[in-house]
Each structure stands twice: as C-alpha cells, then as structure tokens.
Image: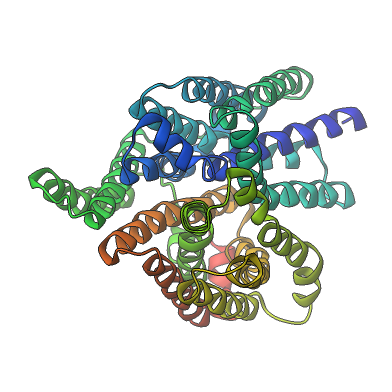
Amino acid sequence: MSTGLQRLGLWTSCLAQLIVVLDVSVVNVALPSIQSDLGLTTTAASWIALSYSLGFAGLLLVGARLADVVGTARLLAWSLAGFTLASLVGGLASDGWVLIAARAAQGVAAAAASPATFTLLTTTHPEGPSRTRAIAVWTAVSLAGGGLGNIASGLLTDLISWRATLLINLPIGIGVVIAAVLLDRRTTYRRGAGRIDPTGALLATAAFTCAIYTVSVAGDGSWSGVSVAVGSGTVALFALLVLQQRRTSRKFVPSDLARDRLIILGNIATALAGACFQISLWYFLTYRMQTQFGYSAIQAGLAFLPLTAGMIIVNLWFTPRVMKRHTPRALVVAGAAVTVPGLLWLTIVDSGGFTVAVLVPTVTIGIGGGLMNTPLATLVTTGVRPENAGAASGLMNTAKQFGGAVGLAAANAAAALAGTDRAAFVFMSMALLAVIAAAGAIPDQRPAEHTGRAP
C-alpha cells in the first residue's frame, strides 16, 4: 500500500477516534449552562453525559464485529455520518429529551466507529515499525481526547455557546466521512463471514439501559412502581442474556475469553477504573469548580490541564519504560494506590485556592491514572489468539465504557443521598481500592490452554 494511503488511513483513524473520545467529556464543563438554558433537573443533566456512554457501552461488542459484515472503511464512513447527524440534532436541540436522545445516538454510532478506527490502522499499516508508530499516535489521541474535551468545552461554552460543543463535530465528521469513502474505494474491500446476533444485541442493550436507570433513580429517592419493575427486569434481562449466549454459536465473547481468569479479572479492574476515570471524575470536578469555586466555564476547562497533561506524560514516557522491569499487574496496583490519596484529598478539601483545592489532587490523580492505563490494556489483550483479538478489544472497551456509565450513576446516587459531592469522591476511592483487589488476584501468566485453544 502506498505511503499516501497509509497516512490517510492514520489520520482518518485518529480524527475519528478523537471526536469519539472527545464527546465522552466535551459536554461536561457545559452542563451547568445546558441545565440552566434548557431548565433541566440535576438528574436529567447527568443523563446528557450518561446517555452517550450508555449507547457506547451497550453496543461496543456488536460494533467490534460489524466490520466483519460491512468492511472497516465503509463502516467508519457510515458510523461517522450517523455521529455527525446526531451532533447536529443535539446542537440545535431546544428540549432536554431531544439532547439526551441525540447523545444516545452519538454513543451508538461511536460504538461502531471506535473499534473500526483501530482495525483501519492494522489494515493500512503492515506489522513492524510503521504500525508501531501509527498505534502510538492513535493511543496518544485517545488519551488526550477526554482532557481536551473538557478544555474545548470550557472555551466553546464561554466564547460561543454550549451548542458549539456539539456543532464543532460537523466539519471534523464530514472530513472523516469523505476520507473513509476514499479509503473504501482505494483499498481492497473484504466482507467477512461473521454475522451479528440480533437477539443478543437487543438483550445486552436492554439489560444495560435498565441497570443504569435503576442505579440513577436510587440517588434522588424517586423510587416508584415503575422503578422497582425496571430493577427487577434488569436481573431477568441479564439472566436471559447469559442463557442466550450459552446456546448461540455467535457469541459476543468467545468461550476461551469467557473462561480466562486473567481476562475476567482484568476487565473487572478495567470497569472499576472506568467508574472513576471515564466520566465521574470529570463530571463532579466540573460542578465543584463552577458551583462551589465560582470558576467560569473557560476557567474550569483550563483547570483540567494539569490532570490531562499528567496522565499523557506519565502514560507515554514513563509507564512504557517501567513496564520493562515490572509486571502490568504491579503497575495497575501502584497506579490505583497513587490515585486514591488524590481522591481522598478532594473528599476532605473542597475550598481554598487553586493550588490546594485543584492542582495538588488532580496532578496526583493524573500520575496514578497514567500508570494504570497501558498496563490494564496490556493485561486483557496480550497473548490472546489473533481470531479473538477483536472480541478481546471489544470486551475491554465495553468494560471501560459501561463501568464509566455505572460509576457516574452510582456516584451521582451517593452524592444525592449524602447531600454533598464528597460522597462521590469517596465512592471513586472505593472503586479504585477494588481495582487493587482485582489486580492482586490476577495470575502472573495466562494458562497455556487459553492461548492455544480455538473458541
């Protein structure tokens, strides 16, 4: 493949991944403005952030297999077109429910786009230094996206409007769609033999949606007959999903992965880490800085720079070097152990100047998060058979996104019950202590039968 096509594939993948990750957090700083403008309750405002992650997490396993059906570049074009259209609808929304629905549609489109971005890199770059460099750039973009989302959110909200946080996706999305269509026409297109199991996809999506709703309503005391019924239905839906996956030949998670203790514990740790880092941390810091500290949207966005920079610097330059001498499991434990004091600091200190109230704890949290990211991904993907690589990646992303969605709902419930956001940071601390326990139980090496047996 020509160098020109390789570069096009790289930047198409990176730009697509950037807006997918960016939109996880891009509305965070804008939420107070959105809540005021549209007259939303705090719970409804949290669903603006939550609905995106829920759509993303609920369909990631399906999205990871869609490329086998329609082709990678073609899937990327279709999914980004849907993502861009949903961004337009959300940016023009005059009612809260329209914005929430648009964010959910963005999440569904992102679930198809995100796995395709990584697959596109591997199909346009042969193994070796070229692919290694491409993956390094893609990873850096993925890490930077969440923090840049908060910064861009603050700038756009203060200088233009909260609507710009969604409408900014239009020029980027259109450019990615054009590039993906060009790649689809100029590269060899292979339609895979895989098929999507619609029953499993529907059961998984319904189960995850009901679970988030149940946890969310627990916090504001709005239990009703409907809430209790949905909570009971959640258990039934997950039970049906397990039974259906045991009987179907088109499993979302191959049997090898489902029986692998390392994969199971690694993804549990990934979900628990996501409960802190994916949405909750950014969400509650945003509200604290704007409602308690009196920061403007742009000041709150810029205040996230130390946290974002710390995570990126540690992850790109320090963690890879340390991984040569220490196991991924040890670094996950170390990263969580460094992060917990920062979260406890936020629990105790909720006033004062920027240095004491924001800089010290967020730099500490950034260092810990930077230590955890690459080792967690390494734990759940290294040694997996090539034919299971897509499923392993999809499982990891699902754990991260769904963990983030559940984490936000649970942290919001804890804060509502306690009447203070300190409870949310206590919850995040407990989640990371559970990460330490899960990582500590992970075996040093994957048993040979799990890497050598067909699914």
